[in-house]
Length: 94
Image (cartoon, rainbow, N blue to C red):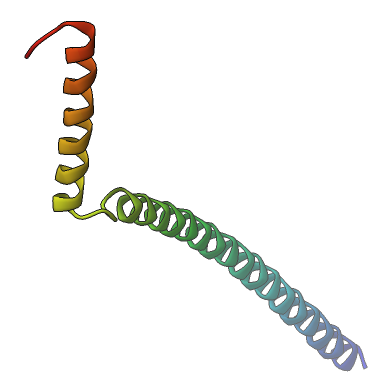
């Protein structure tokens, strides 16, 4: 009878220990996965910021170089002629 009680007590203790180990492992895995998800999310957010910055810079460059060089040269020549006319009216000659 004492042997039966002790063996049952041993079995109960081992079951409780296994259960505690299971839950400890479960909690550790849950925390690990949660932290991993946060780190992935942080990396994803950084990637989005970089992507948005690059997209903005590409749009800026596209706007800057939208006019072709010959058209810009023609605009400069037209403004140069206007400035020369204005300077001649003022009495300066180039």
